[in-house]
Each structure stands twice: as structure tokens, then as C-alpha cells.
Amino acid sequence: MRVKQTNVFNNNSGLIVPIFVFYMGLFFYPLIRVLLFSVFDPAFTLKYYYKFFQTSIYMHVFLLTFKLGLIVTAVCIVLGYPVAYLLANAPRRVQGPLMICVIISFWTSLLVRTYAWMVILQRKGLLNTFLMKIGIIDKPMKLIYNTFGVSLGMINILLPFMILTLYGVMKGIDKNLLKASQNLGANPFQSFLRVYFPLSMPGVTGGALLVFVIAIGFYITPSLMGGLKDITISLLIENEIRKLLNWGYASTLSVVLLVITLGFIYIYNHFLGLDRLLGGEKKVR
Image (cartoon, rainbow, N blue to C red; front, top):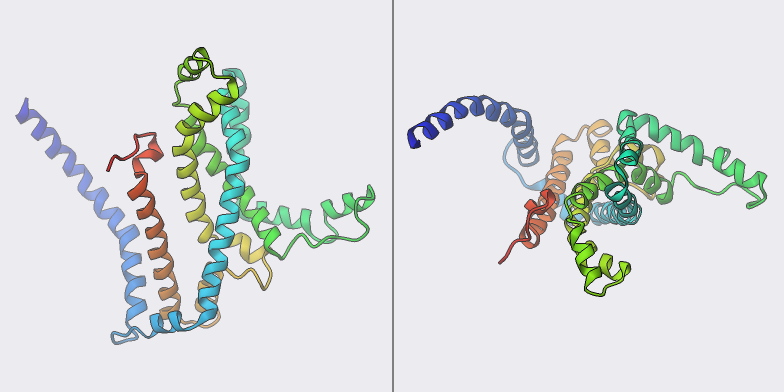
């Protein structure tokens, strides 16, 4: 049996090597090129990193980016948890249509969805026009080209990621545990708060990590719906490349953003474990 297992492994390794080489070229080669751009100009230099840490405006942009990411993540958790709970506990005949309502957003271009929100939120858009007609407001509200507009557009795009992550974890929760807690004297609210909610936490933390990482690198929505006070790191990188042709500094900003992102992932893995995203057990240290 050992010989057969070794042969199977060797056969599979022959298939894995080309795939591994392909992904190395697809992901790691561009990253290496970006890293080299950030430290060679053309000789080895750290001037771009010095510039980043000595210029307060860039640190301010990073803080604004993280603040926006935290806002979007928090709102996605609040809105996504009830929807995921409904999906996971609804009858089978209802789950299908509800799931289609969630994933149908992936069938529409991000650019189209962003422009749709611009039509709705602009000064003479659908929302302002409707609110003025029914007498709630006297003049148009500024709902776009500010943090509110950017946050709303990003929440609309990233909410399905949160819902699906939560749903995957909630679907694996044994409902008999809730029945057992109620048999022991707990009411439905106590069963949810002390049994169901803790078991769903891997979905909450995993969805938060996923949404936050995507949010801090988002480009389309901040560029179209943001104002001058809503410059994110992705817009800063785009400006360095397209307008200033400064590939070295743009690469430095990209490397710093990548390192910070990996730092968040490391912290998550250290305290919770990335296997919890798949419904695994919490790490015991």
C-alpha cells in the first residue's frame, strides 16, 4: 500500500508542478517587479520609502483608507448577518430565490453598478427628487462626492461577500444544539446569543477580513463617487503612475499597502486561524 501511495503522489506532483509554475508567473513575478521598482532607480535606493514616512499627507491618506475600510466592514456585518441568518435557516424552497437575489449582483459590472448609484444619489437624482416631491427636504442633499457616497457604493458591492461568507459558516451549525439549549431552559433569544452567535463568529471575522482587505484596495467607486477629501491609497497610486509617471513611488505605495494587508492577515491567523474561514476549529495555543 505504501508503494501505491508514493506512486500516486508522484503522479499528482507531475500535474502540480506546471500549475505551480503558472501561478508563480501570474502572481509572484508581478509582485517581484513591483518590489524591484520600489528600491531601484536605477541603482539601489530607499529614497521612496524615506519620502513616504517623512511626508504626513501620505500617512493621512492611509488613515483615511483604513477608516473607510472599517466603516464599510462594520456596516456590511450589521446588514449581512440578518440576511445570512435568513438564508441559512429558511425553508429549502425559499433558499434558492433568496440566494439568487444575493449572487445576481455578481452578474453586473462594478462600473455599471457604480454609475447607477451616481444617477440615484446626484443632486437632481432619483432619491433627491423623490424626497423633495413628498416634502421631506426643501433642497437637494449632498449624497455623492463625499464619504457617504463612497461608503454606500462600496457597501453595495462588498455586502454579498460578507453574506456568502457568513452563510457558509451558518449552514454548518448544528440546529440540534439550539434545541438542546432550549430543552435546558434557555429561551430562543438566549439560545441565539449564547449558542448560535458564538458558533457563527468564524463567519463574522472571516467576512470582516475579506471585506476589509478588498475595501482598502478598492479603486472604481472611490474614483467616481469620492470627493477631494476622500482620496484613498489606490487613487494615490493611480495618480503617481498615470499623471506623474513615477513608477518607483507608486510601487513603494503598493508594497506598503501589501505589507499592511499581510499584517492584518497574519494577526487574524495568529489569534483565530485561517482554517476558521472554512469552518474549522479555533487554534489552541
